[in-house]
Image 1 (tube, rainbow, N blue to C red):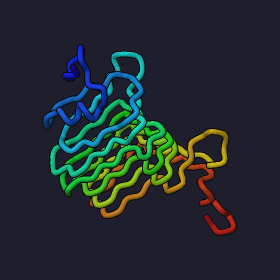
Image 2 (cartoon, rainbow, N blue to C red):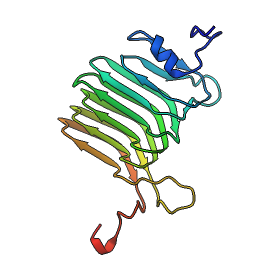
Image 3 (spheres, one colour):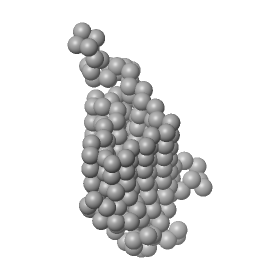
Image 4 (cartoon, rainbow, N blue to C red):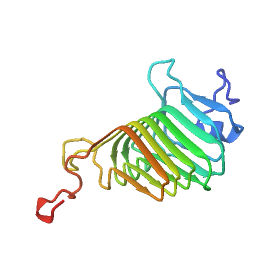
Length: 196
């Protein structure tokens, strides 16, 4: 019987999130997980780094309808998912990502909409079809040691970014410290004849 204990852990992150109360910390063992989770209340999702490796999710982490409090996600990797991290708030709530890697996302790497704050620290987006990082109607955006990396879509196996590296709309404040965008040749958007 899965109880969420060390002896009987939940099989998915979604099971743990569904059982967690506001303010709980969910410790995720290093393993490959097929799915991500939808989070609707303030919790901490913490990848266990005491063992070898980190948790790798093949599905998105979605924060949906956050009306207040903080959702914190630390020490995880999302790879080959339809989307990396999507956070939608109700004009309140804060989402913090720390030591998160998003690789080859089928949409945005990280997107925040309608939050009081989106804070990214030591976040690495390696290839996304949409924006690497995007924020809309989020009052405060803080980026520290963030990297969005993309190379030509025609390269040999490297990540590509087919949208834009970073986009912000309707934010009161954006603070960026040690942010790196390595876009290379991106999906035809570097046509010198057209001036871009």
